[in-house]
Image (cartoon, rainbow, N blue to C red; front, side, top):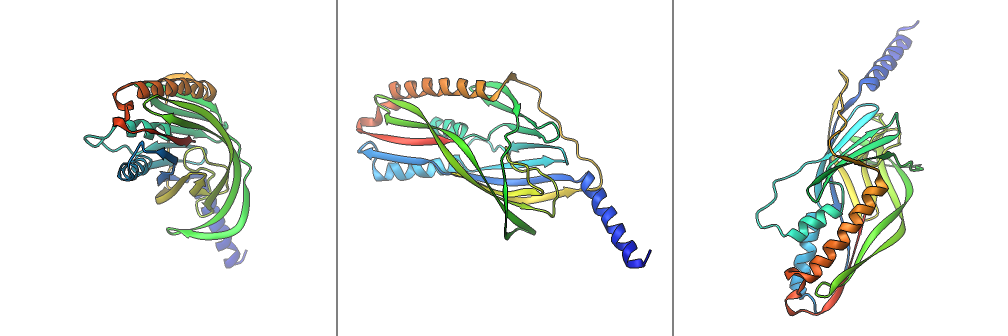
Length: 279
């Protein structure tokens, strides 16, 4: 065996060994835009501008993804609630999704999502969604990593709130098709990604999922020893459909309470608005 061949073989062995033990932490920042339409004189231009700013702020979040080759856990980095934050903004942040802990097991093709809803902890356990990715030739840099573009499509169910808060809000389900664009790097050869996203031959560093953008801002790798991932186990066990039906019922109740309570009188303003919340 020549020296060059020997060195090449040694490099392959080293890379393979590192990829078997590869793990670490990736930090992501997300932002979600909502389809907000306000009609009539329910809100002044100043009030509308303030509402849009509050909505944008409520949906900006930071997460950490801990991962090894087969497992990962994605969790929001929670900041202390700022004094005086409006209850409606807290509820909006909850319904735009992503809070809690999201565990994926790629080998067993399943996930466990631990989340708190109205003071109660739930464990949502179900099979992973299998997105059919199409890998393109386009590339770009994210931080120190060269990334390749991939696309997929998914069906989204969104809740649309319409009406006048003074007289009560109405909700309906809107179903549409979302085009997903992801950027992954082969420099980190694992199939994980933020939240529900996975299934590419490298770590996903950016996702554009309809009205949500997720961007990785930092990666810390550990190839020296295996990373242990602990699956969440506390909470009432439900599947995805059961949890969705329960939250829909509670959302409808809160809409009615909002419309009939002190916050729903609108301060004498008349008109209607529409907001679409989808995941």
